[in-house]
Length: 181
Image (cartoon, rainbow, N blue to C red; front, side, top):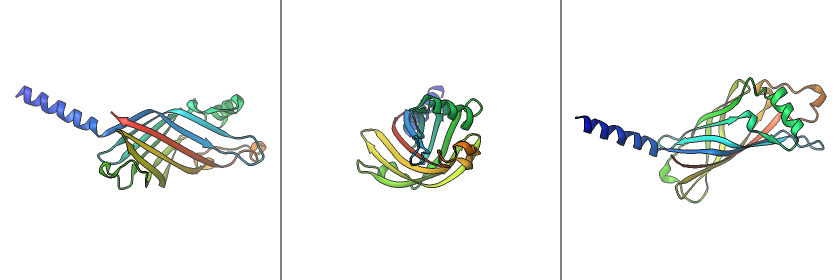
């Protein structure tokens, strides 16, 4: 009886693990530039993401201090004045890929959407129909996409002195290469 229970336990644990694809090196970029002014853009190359291939549920976590800017002073202002990363150290997304099926993935790009909630700066917003390209190649799943959010939707105040140099529209791009866990 004990042997049967232990065998079933290991089989169920391995079955659960087979449904997960993971990365700790996902890439997330954002840009809030205004023409004729200095570029306001950052990149984070250590985003953790996981996809449950049994149901299409997807989650991503980025440490806010992981965003790198070309200008160190801009990075400091971002962390201290806008993102307040000491108080709000993480940005998360939790959602579900529409009509996800591992059986239909191929080497060609598959266009779909993902719906979910983005939490940044202590505020959670629902995001619907984010365009997503998903591809499967050699036991890896690639997810690529982009969307635009408003800084004001996340209670980020842009001081009047820099309002003409910084867009309220923030374009976000993501790229994840997930491997079987």
